[in-house]
Amino acid sequence: MSRVLITAGANGIGLVTAHAFVAAGYRVWVTDVDAAALAAVPASMRASRCDAADEGAMAALFAEISAEWGGLDVLCANAGIKGPTAGIADMPLDEWHACIRVNLDGAMLAAKYAAPLMTAAKSGCMIFTSSTSGLYGTPFRGPYVAAKWGVIGLMKTVAMELGGFGIRANAICPGSVTGPRIDRVIEAEAAAKGMTAQAVRDGYASGTALKRLTDPEDVAALCVFLASDGARMISGQALTVDGFTINPDP
Image (cartoon, rainbow, N blue to C red; front, side, top):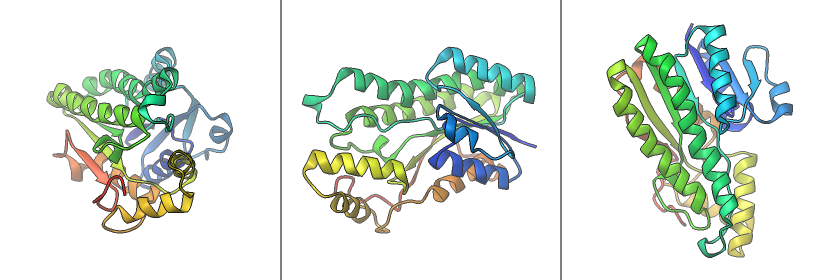
């Protein structure tokens, strides 16, 4: 049975993805910093608390995975935060660093510690959560955008470095995904722009060809596909799940 680790897997997209992998027959291990969410994770999954941007914690996590599972087949480096909503002239440097730390440092550390397990097996799949913000600029979201662009560059480098070991790496780029997180983003952006939250939400949807927001199940389905043999020749790609963004700042 294939083994998958999902960072930030007790909430939102991560949890929906975890359920999709369980349904596909995988052994699933999720981590999160949200103790209450971890306590609610079903018994069908292994769950542990871990800050994805804490190198000591990540080293200990992968040592535990190695001891319990003997290896890892799929990594979903999913940990991320929305970061501050502010114009560049008002950007607090400490909040910039905090956003980069979780979104980009966390992805690097996951890859760093997954790589030895996968190279030993000469196989594996790494899936990095980027964003359509990693493909386009987004006003008032500077650190988040910078981190998500960085995730794509990291992914392509990992794909080049580890491809000779039979390891694939790809990034998923969700659009605006329904759920509490996008609700908070929309509310913050509405306040920054002097708009109503509904107007911002409608703008997000109208900026796509399909005129609707993405559901987390759409993202989870792509993750499961990328981990499958059906995607065995897909590597180094940034794949959107967004209904085709035609106007990134509607």
